[in-house]
Length: 88
Image 1: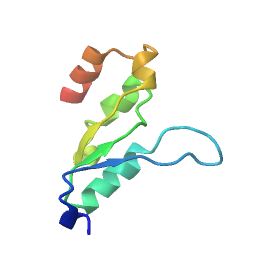
Image 2: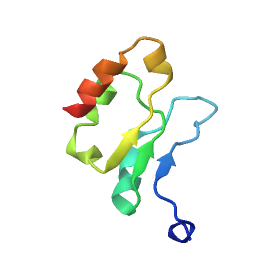
Image 3: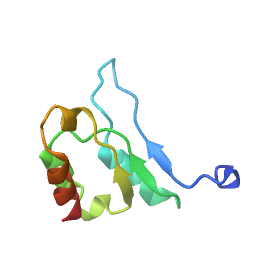
């Protein structure tokens, strides 16, 4: 299946619930990462510095990466701040 197609990683995102676009659950992406052998990149879901800091929790250790978008561009945090928080 997926491994036969030479897929190297998965980008995970959740669809909105009840018509609301709230991003996805970083926890759900992390749970997926624990269950498969491929690297998982969480797409969306980072809305604040608190979300970035929570990614250093051991429960998120299997995530390969996250994408940053709207909240970065709106100034909720800067790219250097994000890098520093993710490196801790």
